[in-house]
Image (cartoon, rainbow, N blue to C red; front, side, top):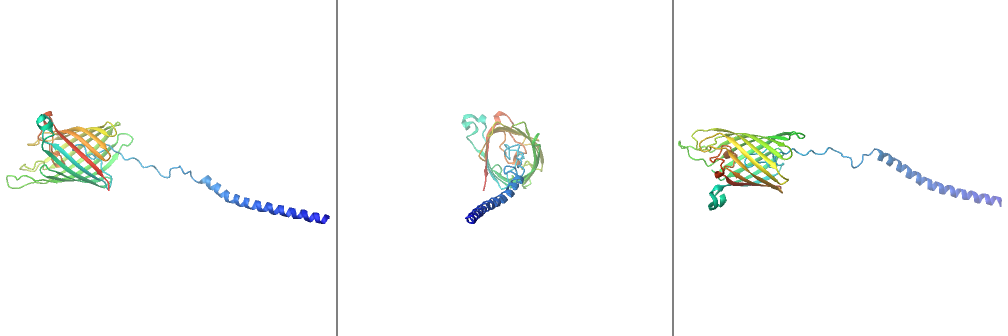
Length: 302
């Protein structure tokens, strides 16, 4: 009886030991698997931590690559296209109701297409029906500085133009024109953009007997009233010459929306392409000589 009881107890203890082993071994394996993961969690960086520096917002002074006529230092982004159509009405506001205050009459028209071959470079082809002027230019944005103080940008433009030139007294024609421009733009305060554009133009008067060089200094400013509305003005200080006695000036408003720029202008010049505009205008900046004009540009993505 005692032997049978001892055997029974030994059997119960053996089963209990096997149960303990069967429970301890899985728990031990789970613990071994969990310990490395806990260690890894202690040294692994948190998911919310930034892995690289944030991209800095590019410096911008003027929103558009062009004011009324003068260029700005702004360029398109690489691969972008910009289409332009601009008008300058020949009648003046002072012509009154007979010419619908300048809107009922002939216009000078310009069509343009710009392409950005680089974030800092763009090429522009423009045609004006005034003297059939065909203009090709390249703009390069050189540098920008002053992110924390006074942001400013510097660019250069070089271009050439061909025209339906008049016949000179000796029977020859001189249709070619060449120009270069330095552009300096600065942003003051929270909403004021200013620009200075010294320029040199070769052969400003197609009907002059001798080739001339024209030097001018363009001044442009823009006040951004809101995100989509701004007021702009520009003035090009030029030398007085026969047929181009006066400086060209313009003022108006710019509406910016969805890749479009609408510029509604009052101006004393109908000469739009750079090789025409830089030489001056035959009209004085007198209210009797003010005309209506507009520029419309559209940004294209492909």
